[in-house]
Length: 95
Image (cartoon, rainbow, N blue to C red; front, side):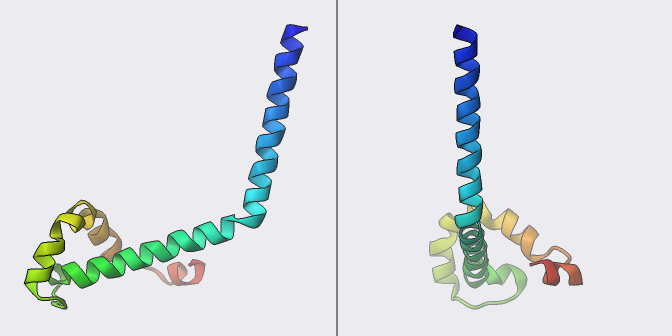
């Protein structure tokens, strides 16, 4: 009896987990992915404005860039990699 109770509880929790995933996928996944994509674009724009000197685009005076540098240092490597990676026509189509 005890083993069957555990299996039934586990199956019920798996069904509840699957139902939650289904509802999340139908209701909120599109909004969450759009919000994450928007955040990525805004962070890339912020990094370009503050550290554009690295790419030859002096937008802000160096004083403000140096003041914002401690906040931007952890993201410089990934920002440069995403900004300077090769892109294809299919990247524009897919999204």
